[in-house]
Each structure stands twice: as C-alpha cells, then as structure tokens.
Image (tube, rainbow, N blue to C red; front, top):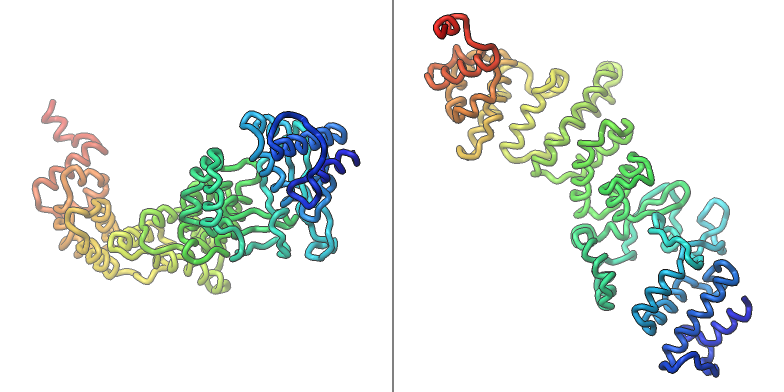
Length: 442
C-alpha cells in the first residue's frame, strides 16, 4: 500500500511532485498515460486495502478538494466508455476526520473526508454538514450569505456542458430561479446533521419516507424563519398546500407553530390559497377555545382570537373578504369571538362587498351565504328587503344550490314567479311531491 501511494504521488499531476517517470502503458498522450496510471494505482490500492480514506491515500490536508481535482483530470483524459467503467467500479462515501477546534460537545470539529472503495454503494447525501465548514451548533437554522450562489453555480456547471449535469439543472431550474436562497439556508439538528432549505422543501414535496412527516415540516418551518423576506411567502404557500391535507396527522404543537408562521409570512391577496387553510385554523382555534376559561386564561384566549384576526387580514379583495365573513359564520364559537354581534351590521358590510363585485363575476354561493347569515341573525326585515334582489342575481340553476330549509325561510320574502317555481323544485327534490300534487297526478 505504501508503494502504491508513493507511486501515485510521484506522478500526481494535480500536486507538486515530478512527473518524469519512465513507463509506457500504451501509445497515448502523456497526460492520458498519467491519468490511466494514477487511476490504476488507485484501483490496486482499493483491491489491496478493501477501501481507503482519501485523506490517507492522497496525504493532503484538504482531501475533498484534491479528490475533485484528480477526478476532473481523469475525466478529461478518459474515453466516455473508460470513465463510465471507472465510475461504476469506484464508489465515494462521505466521511470525517477529527480536527483541532471546538464547536461540538466533544471539543473537536469535523473536517470533510471521503471513503473510497470498489463496488460500494454511492448514496444521495441527506447530510451536508461535512462540507459546510460551519461553527454553528444545532439544533438551529441559519442563512449563510456567503454560501452557494445559485446563479454562480448554474454558470459554472453550465460551462462544462456535461449533459448529465444539464439534466440535473433542468430538474432544479424552478427552485433555483424562484428560491435561490434555499441553497444557502440550513437546518442543523441535535446530532449536528445539516440539510439545506432546498433539500428540506423537496423532502416535504416528495414525502421522503426516510424520516417522520412531522420532521419534514419542522425542517421547512425552521428554514422558512431564516430565509430572506422575499422568499418566505412562496415557501409559506408550499406549507399551506400540504398542511391542509396533513394537519390531522401532525402533533398539535407542530400545527400551531406552522399556523403562526405561515400566517405571519403569508402574502395578502391569494384568497384561494389562504381560504383552503381555514378548516385547519378553525379546528385548532375551536379546540383551543374549548379548553380555556376566558376569565382565567385571558392571555391564551386572546392569543387564539389573535390568530383569527391575523388570518382575516390576509384577505384584501371584496370576494375574499366576503368569503371569510361567511366562513367565520360557520361556527358559533368563532362568530362569538368576532366584532359583529347581533344586528345587521355584518349583513350590510357583506352586501356592500357583494355589490362591489362585477355583476358577471359574482359567486352564487356568496349570495346564498348572505341569505343564510341573515336567517341565523334573525334579520327578517333585512330578508324582506334584500332576499329577492339577491336571488334575482342568480341563474335558475344556481338557485338549486339552496336546500329545502332555505326555501322555507325565503318563500315569505319572495314574489317572483320563477323563484317560487324554483323553490317548489327544491322542495320536491328533498321531500317529494306534496300530497295534493300526488293526488292531482293520480
């Protein structure tokens, strides 16, 4: 092994040693002969030792950098077939060596190293702590402004015109364009393993089974809190889209932390996205309010209601704000925490929002929701005034969105024959024909 290592260093064109050996493995260019010779020495060493540390075989302080230079040199001199054969034969695994310094509990830091072997398993890395050279002690997350720059990375890799690398860049292009800082924002766990924000996001998106679901959310949540502000709303949006499906499978403390952060980081205006989050927030607040005594736990009660206020503030357009009003009216406990109380104030505000919408772009469900809210508030007079005008904004097919109980409530306030006919249809669907109508048909 010592002889092989000495021969390697004597010919190492990436180092400082002489390169005037007398050997002629084949009729090739000098650089090509050197590359083949060095690679063969490495393979022999791996056969003899059944695997070696790069730091030991290369005998340098920075084995990762030297290995990278050697591999680039060999790649430049091998034929495509030779390089493919070499890459299949030699596997590289991350490792570490103890070094002086102190940022870990055992008063040692870790310097990146590699383990080289034949026919081993080269796996995708879930831990990048070995290449970060960071003194940050976990559990924590941090953003490194001097870390990997997505634009520079793309330029450097594109310059090589490696077709396989181009496939990887193509796959990552949406992430690199929209969320470049996820490449240099990291989460470090209790065991000092580190993942980048980009890795954490894709782990959540792909449902990587290598760790519990809650751990994926915890990783992304920590990264979100340390990203630059412009990139937080898109990541919050990713969390929202997944949380609406996964909330029931997550611990309550994780749901609470996610709700607080995504609402804080959320950009106003995307009513569809944030509206989908309502069932999760409503369930969380309802459970919380059911556990606390408003008189004895005023701080907790106030915090829970505060979630509702901050959530409602995300909606800016008239349609989104009206939809949120009607969502809050779906629960007595939630409605009790609002500022509307009894009376027609909520109805007047809701009608103003409805009328602010373009006539050809009004969601029929909003009109129906306003009418149901008026009934819950006991505003008969309001219904007598506005029920028919609101119903006449609907197409006959949209009237069928209502239930038989709606028709019972609204019939006294309606005079229009087509609406009354629709009410009869609704009643027949739910309750069948009235006795008199059955007799007439008989």
